[in-house]
Image (cartoon, rainbow, N blue to C red; front, side, top):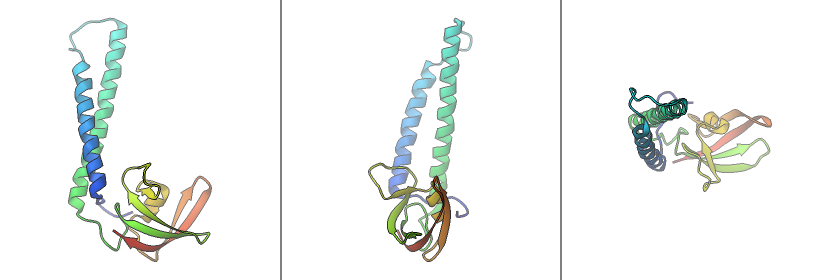
Length: 153
């Protein structure tokens, strides 16, 4: 893995910005349902209040993580053309001789079957590597390795 914050693709940045807006809207809705601390209610009301407070805490944590990722990406600058980073297109040759071209992304996307997320075992192994490097990673089926054939933006 590389040192410091990872750059992200414009698409991933837009997706994170959209998620952040949705999280903030949801947080506002949940916060509006919390009652004044001085209001006395029954145990059911108290349990609902605790559940909403927990949800608010979960939303606050996710908002902080997304905001931190966006802030870090702006500091990181554009991806290095020679090193694999988020947004890179990478051709890898697996142990069985098969080759595959994958896109290293921040967020899972069901519409992109060639996407490998940066936090997956292969994604983590690829980050910061160059063409010609061999990477090792673990899968549910056991340890695997692959050679980086080429790196593109």
